[in-house]
Amino acid sequence: MMVPMSISLDEVRHVARLARLELDDAELMTFQGELNALLGHFEDIQSIDTAGLDPKPHAVALKNVWALDVPGKTLQREDALRNAPASKAGLFIVPTIIEE
Image (cartoon, rainbow, N blue to C red; front, side, top):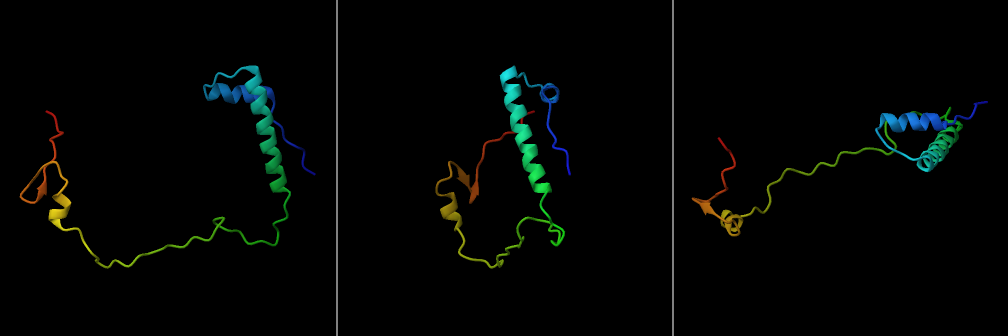
């Protein structure tokens, strides 16, 4: 039989200090309750008998979805440049952003 784990108020205060959180006593007690509830859920999960189950690397089956690399309808250069603020010789003109 497992002894139920619980987190003390001092442990919550210590973790909050490590995380540089300034919590008042009410917030510390709230977090203590939430963390203890979370530990209770973990204990419930640990009590499940998984002896006959195969280990799985993921919770759901992974499957790669590959699309065929087939050329399709393409955007014509004139259409691509139509809304460009500036273009020259079929190319986009962009502002220089390199400073010396």
